[in-house]
Length: 65
Image (cartoon, rainbow, N blue to C red; front, side, top):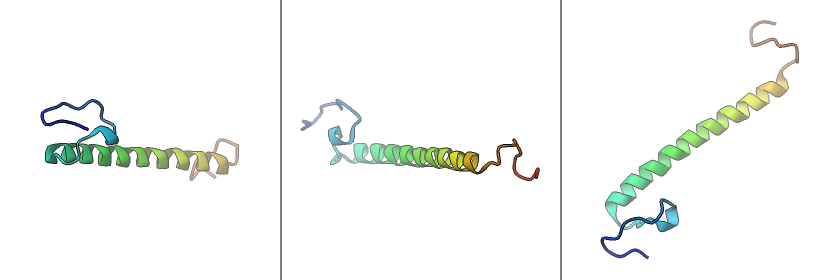
C-alpha cells in the first residue's frame, strides 16, 4: 500500500495507486494504447501466418494468378 507522497515502485497494475486521478488517467491511457498496439500487432501476425498457409507454394502473390 502506498503512502501519501510516495513514488511508484513499479508500473505494474497492482502497484499503481488507482485512487489518485492523475495516476488513473495516465496509466489508463498508457495501458489502453499498449492494448491497441498489441492487438493490432497480433492481428497482423496471425493474418500473415494464415495467408502463408493458404499460399499455393509457387511464390505467386495476390493478383498474379
